[in-house]
Image (tube, rainbow, N blue to C red; front, side, top):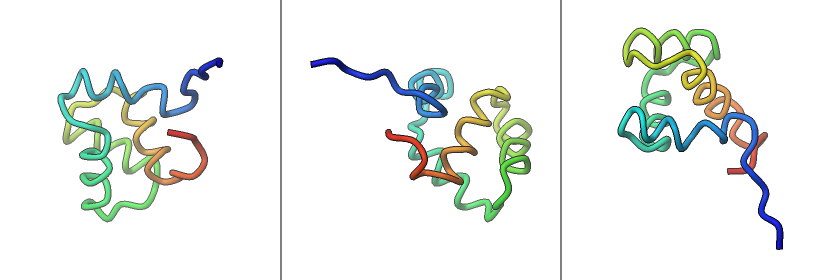
Length: 72
């Protein structure tokens, strides 16, 4: 049986958890608490308030705003 590699934002989740020491579910809770609904403002929030890299911030924001688009 072949396994498929994660694609899209999900492919970043292991490195996000390793680098920032929090689960992606914790990050999604943080994003929900902000009340921010746009991708660009969420990315800027993560970059400025949590010193997250652009790619990691974008992956979290994309998945947070469209959770049904990618298989986790």
